[in-house]
Image 1: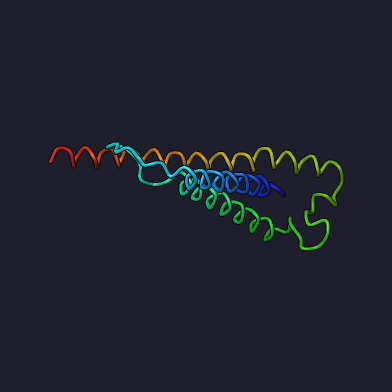
Image 2: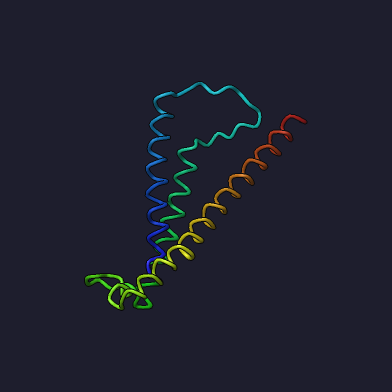
Length: 131
């Protein structure tokens, strides 16, 4: 019913964090010490990827709810609100389970992707050191 709002709020929060991190990256612009295993990608770019993934998941969930008629384009927009108080409790339960679960899965896949990237960069630099 409204589980897509959780990932939307998470994406907005990550977007705010990305702008703050980007501001600090520009403000400090520290000369990087040459570390053989350092990732050249800035943290603001990594957060931007997470933000896009969260918004993408949110739009997919919203589209699914629109197709199934759970979201309408007339007030109150969510059909569960018009069905009574028990439906509102069900809606919040779905937001807490499906919405939070979706946000956690997206963030986990993003984190695993960053770990794989780090391992590949480490392997690449070791191969260059051997030559």
